[in-house]
Length: 283
Image (tube, rainbow, N blue to C red; front, side, top):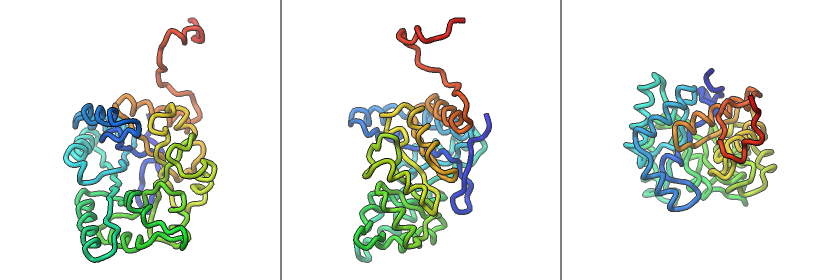
């Protein structure tokens, strides 16, 4: 299997598929019971196996590291790096203290120091911070230029994680020093604030590459349906972030994605049930 296609964020080559971590850490967007199951199920070994599958396929970019995921996730990343002989490119997603005043700025500096210490290449303040600063009246993201400067000072490349489609628009209009954007994008509009066609148009108008998250709407779309929509409707420089719970699921989403991009049938084995017997070809 060839390495997964790549794109560039600023001067860094990254895989067009990113490894998501919601199904590593227990953010199912389904129920507390499902979250608890994920947390109980995952282990350093299972996470290592999933990340190793991705990295062997050339999917070497992981979104969502932060100090509170240490040591489990970070240890699993290091295990996968050893197993594959590849370096994992990580994207930090800190929650900043965006309140006014010196104390808040000092806390934000400490938070960014902790994320830089993880070795993250990119730093995209989490939407909880970013979206709190979006000023629709003035069409700007208040104080984000200061935070981006602090990120640069620590050797990381700044970007923005957001759930608001206005965020990339305002960042572009004000020439904010960011290299990429995170944007929710899926065929059913799950967690999206405006219609899918509007977000699609916004993505195509962005000056920077866009990382699309929740392409399968947190399990509400089959992988083929969710991934086919995402890959077919974004630009060549854009990316799709995909979370999986097992190594086999990682193999499936990689093959399905490559089959879509290469315009071929996937080799993924389908589910077998008695109701499908009538449509199967007989040998």
